Length: 342
Ligand SMILES: O=P(O)(O)OC[C@H]1O[C@](O)(COP(=O)(O)O)[C@@H](O)[C@@H]1O
Ligand SMILES: [Mg+2]
Ligand SMILES: [Mg+2]
Image (tube, rainbow, N blue to C red; front, side, top):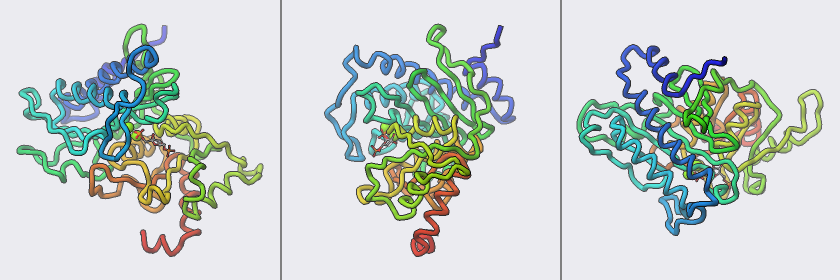
């Protein structure tokens, strides 16, 4: 009989790795797991309940909010509020941070940055969507949380993860000691360890980019796409183009099969589209912990000093050899820009 390890059991077991641990981070991860199950329940029956479609509101990014964006946001914030381990939440769906003031969270140490529903354009068409979260520890021990405690570099994350609501629902996370994946078993309502110690292949044959923006891409990226499409059996080219349009799902596929996800600057998004604090940093932490790489074309994503909560960045993430190839094309195509950017 195969041993089933639930997320809760695994978190407790792993707590021993952290001699100073008092269970706060474990409880925080548990709270995120609970909210993920609630959101999963709605996602799974999205067509049957009034949760599809637009919410008729706009978020700080100027994007129309979907009903499920708002629902997921409410569920995660309420789980973090009632759990007592989180003092501040920074969400894609709110202009500013939300301070959690409650009796039980008086000594809360953790800051959570979250993209409650990733892949909003896919919600109404039954394509995989996700949730992305990043966790930091306060740098001060008391008093109100200061902005610099929230705008910490990605390397300071104590944990990060994502949930993917797809053909099955999975929660994948790291605390800086490898990456583990858990699949939700609806019959027992538990996330169970299904993908221990996930490792991304060093190289692959899949590239993921929205080629609809091709003419707006920097020359180096255009050259890389051409490189992927040229026939060369020795390097397994032409590579396969796969783009779901939900960052979580595209990065998850590449984590398992090998590949590279690219979202460069475009003329409509001159700083890139994806957000550093709650999309790029957490996924970069996961991919690096799984043996891969994530950069903005020059700099390691995790080394970027955040200046704003909703700051965007270009991102190239996935199998190390493929990300390095993209960087090489960017370096050689735009030497002038590299010297300026480096
Ligand atoms: O439609 P585009 O420009 O290719 O953008 C798709 C990207 O935008 C996103 O949907 C942005 O995330 P949100 O849905 O959380 O806003 C990513 O998941 C995805 O990779
Ligand atoms: Mg997103
Ligand atoms: Mg989102």
